[in-house]
Length: 424
Image 1 (tube, rainbow, N blue to C red):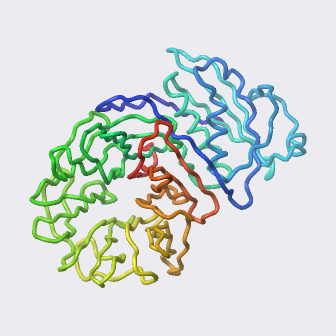
Image 2 (image 1 turned 60 degrees about the vertical axis):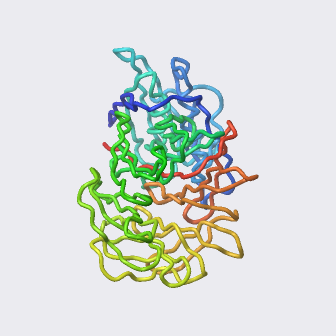
Image 3 (image 1 turned 30 degrees about the vertical axis):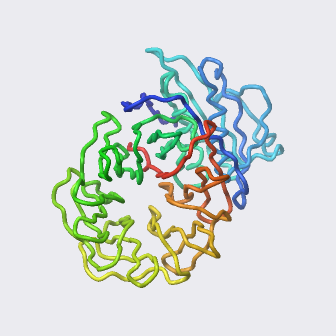
């Protein structure tokens, strides 16, 4: 039975359009027990402005979960009569076949079939309808389909990331595909832009901009490019974090003295103080169920991570190992806490299993910052530094697969944030 997926061009009215400086991906390490999969050349791929087969293969390969089996150079349509034993002899546990055909209205139709050779299941089929402008998006969604069918978990290839690039005296807030190959500029400024945070529905970004010569929190609509001021109080306005329902933001304000955590509606109304202390509280993050806020505080004498009810109350300390732990980020499944810890003078991404309180240092770099989980909780995107220049990197939550995303244009890349799953 074939399911039909319709893909329309996503409307993103960007504040500025810049040269498309893609990120190159370098992969080191691989997951345990990678699934051998053959992605045969899609029949009719030559009809498209960009090869669809290559996008799918690149997505699966960089995940570290799949091992690509050489399918040969001959395109194989999805309805071809095949001998699965021959593909098994080649070492494939799964096989993907597809045909691309012209469709009405200048669109295309790709019919694909996925064989799970190892389990001997009936093949899964899917039909994707798409336009020439959404070839890459279609490839990502096909990779998501394959990923979910073979692993049982949702893929994140069609999700987006945001990050900030500094080139000379210019700052750009970029929105990009998860593979770093389709950057678009949402905002360009001669003043710093920091702390981008995705709304739960993926339609808006909250961030701090210094465009008015002071730190102000804005919410930015990606569909219209409209900026809405959320927090412009006396002093510093920083560190926005969305509640899971997208109605409120946790923010850090210094309007009453030291940095303290508040909650505010997404339209800037309803300001409420959440946590109070005489020390610095900052970097709040909601738990996935919205019941708690995790944050960084030096109330115990050194920067550590604490937790408080989202409605306020007494805070409890979460991190105890080491004298410096900052930037808490909860995994979307609520099972892990990622943060940056200082170890022997090195700042490294660390993850804590919240049930067992066991911790694991995931990186071997020395200047990590801004960790951000993928929506399936499998990968953590973060900023690091190589040769004095900011680069983006990613590491699987078990530490096995590492990636480095390097900018070709020589800009300083920082402040990454991984967006949510696409809405149905």
